[in-house]
Image (tube, rainbow over all chains, first blue to last red):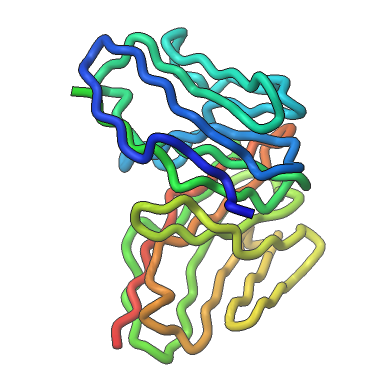
Length: 112
Length: 111
C-alpha cells in the first residue's frame, strides 16, 4: 500500500486566492482526518469523516475553510479566500480501527 | 477540559542510554494513550498504544507505561541510537474519534 497520499507537497499562493488540498486515504480505512500543524498551536484537528460523512467539523477555523469527501478514496480541503495566517502544514490521516492513525506527508501551505 | 502536557524542552542524550519522555494529562484518565514519532518534513507515525488498564506495553526497544494515579505516561527508548532522534507525540482520544495531540518532545541522540 502506498499509504496516505497528499497533494501538492508544497503550495505557495497569494492572499485572497483559493487553495485546494487533496488526500487519498488508505483503501479500506473508513475514517479520514484533516489536521493542521503550526509551531504555535501544534497539531489541531480540523474535521473528520466516517464512511465519507463529516462527523465533527468543530475545528474548522472559519467559513473560509470547507472539506468534502465525495467517495471513499478522495477528500479535499479548500480555503477560499486564503490569508497569510492560514500558512501551516496540513496533514491528512486515515484509520480503519479507530486508533493508530496513518498520516500522509503533508502539504506545506504558504500564503503571501 | 482535558489537556496533554509534554516537556517543551528538547531531551539530549548520549547514544546507548535510555531516553525517557513524559506525557501528563490534567483531568480524567483517557481510555488509552497513543505515542507517535514525527521526523522533520514528515507526518507522524504511530508507534504504540497503551490502555488505561495496562501498566506497561513493549515493542522492541520501546516501552510505554501508564500510571493513572500520577496521570502520566512514560515513553522509554532503550539503547538509544542517533536514528531515534525525532519529535515524539503523545495523544489521547477525546469524544468520538477525535485524537488530540500534545505539543511533542524533541529527542536528540548524540553519538
